[in-house]
Length: 265
Image (tube, rainbow, N blue to C red):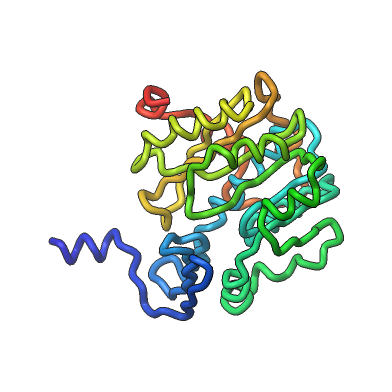
């Protein structure tokens, strides 16, 4: 029975393709069954060929279609997969990508070339430095949507205060949370930290991603406004680009919280 459980539910690694470690970052690429090539940072999967589109689309389109008129976006942490989705929005004028993990860049360049095709877009600025260093040079900048895509997921109250300063008055912060199935008690901490930083309204998004532990993802959106603006439904239906998972119904469905989550938060 144990062997059958491992075969049915564990990620089967066929071979290790790449492994390096530096500056507290362990980066590895595996050939897996059934998710294809998978990239992991500190033993947490962050890219998988066959199902990362769930996460990439939900990290981008709900926030951009909730903001009334987004023009500027920051992607903090690795941008691979996320940037491709942001660039689908033709009205975005400026995209700032801030990350300092050179090992990750090396692994993606060699094994995930599909994420190397958009780097010449003139709307995009790449900054290979820490968020702290970037902010020291851009103290007064605010952006419409801030996508925090840093894994492993950590809980840092000071980071929420930093993101509050970076988000414009009508802006939206979106970031991954611990799994609402495996680590639900941490959602309270995420909510408390965001509210203490100054964010007035919070929404959680829930959706599947098979390769992620538990198979279920949870994201948090936060804004300084008293309530979130209504989703721009017509713009979603009239969008000029294709998606594989995201649409208006999936957006609405993701906002519906299971009873055990509502009770906890």
